[in-house]
Amino acid sequence: MKFGVLIETKEPEKAWNGFRFACASLEKKHEVKVFLMSEAVECELIEHAVYNVKEQMERFEKLGGELLACGTCLKSRQLEEESVCPISTMFDCVEMVEWADKTITF
Image (cartoon, rainbow, N blue to C red; front, side):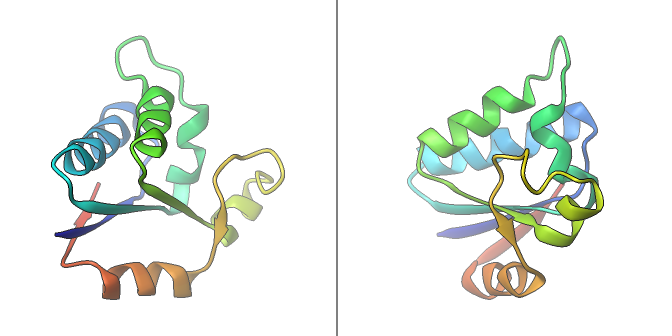
């Protein structure tokens, strides 16, 4: 199955769970794309004692997941050159939803 995961928050526990879900899905042999939108483009900057979002993001990429991030949201935060998230467009988000059998939001 193909899962499109849309994450819109930088709230540590929710973002962490979004990436945990994406990783678990990959481990169960599903195809997964994650699209970061709004404040979620700041996920890699989250520092939390319990919810290590960056670790889950790195795990997601090592498992072969595809990570996309809203270019407009990155630019509005001056993150376009500092972020490891690839710059994507709203058309990429639409294509992810069209591609996915299921779309999940966090």
